Image 1 (spheres, rainbow, N blue to C red):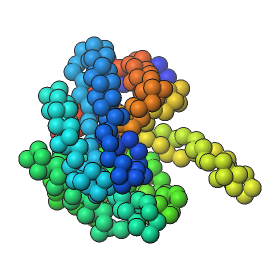
Image 2: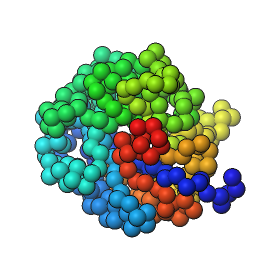
Image 3: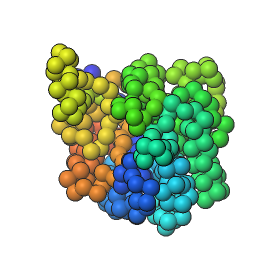
Length: 333
């Protein structure tokens, strides 16, 4: 297919994944103020919903993955604090037929360090955080979350198995092509990002013994929906850059990065076109954290990326939608 070619007549699902979180990662334990970024995100995405719907001629739906875990519990008093505090917002988003799911980080307070540790190397703690989040979500909505993701694009076999047992239907933690990576710096993170460099480039049911492989045809249960990605240059801190220079390493190495809506549109838009051309049955994911909406410059970039995607020659076939409809459009659900 040429650079300006189209992808046929089929509709193309676009999943916009919005992590609804506090306005920071390593927040102070007493820093329990409102989530201003989330509040602004609800307003901005309502405006963009209308823009996307007018262009495609179809209703636009988004996927909101809200934080409910032990960091939220210790800082705000309960893992499901945001469920109650923003009750009206969730009701509004559900009325617009958006997906509201769960997003879990493995933050654990380390008393001696006086700081949080993202403890992905501690499976018992990871599972405690997941169960706390699912429990809070279920108590609020009367059902478990259908859509789910872990923080830092992290998961492993045990966590996938737990999510399936907890009746998660759509797992959104994995990133296509992403290589295994330790989390720097190790004094605030433990564990290693999973090797997703060879996972299927489509939604699939994971094999029982290896989530990175598809189960045989006819399998049922939870779907893994890999996020879209591109190769991007990673610009480190000046100290790391100097170390790389002294040791004759590339100053700006390339690594796999999912499609973040706050990234430079000049890099994201061509990558979107390449990603869609590279899939037999194309779909697209676009990700954003709500803390980004606190900055007017990044809010403008989010708008440029979403509106810029509409310049793609096949954009009128785009369906901005939930996981269940995406699978139906792809002929999988």
